[in-house]
Image 1 (spheres, rainbow, N blue to C red):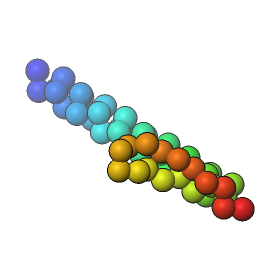
Image 2 (image 1 turned 90 degrees about the vertical axis):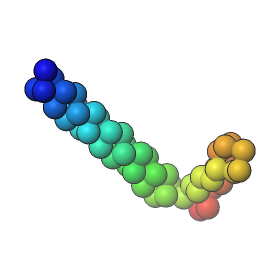
Image 3 (image 1 turned 90 degrees about the horizontal axis):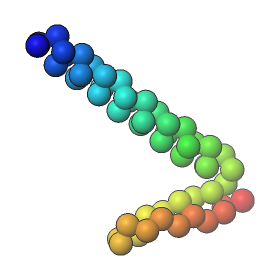
Image 4 (image 1 turned 120 degrees about the vertical axis):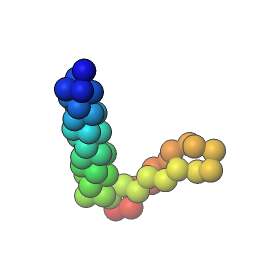
Length: 51
């Protein structure tokens, strides 16, 4: 049972790290294209071209 729990924790850790990497990659690509995205206090996103 302990091995299964450890395996689940490891899988969750790897999966969450890959999501963070994808988010950082998308953010970097957007900045290279000259786009800034913001989130307002209501949770809405909007983007502006900076170039």
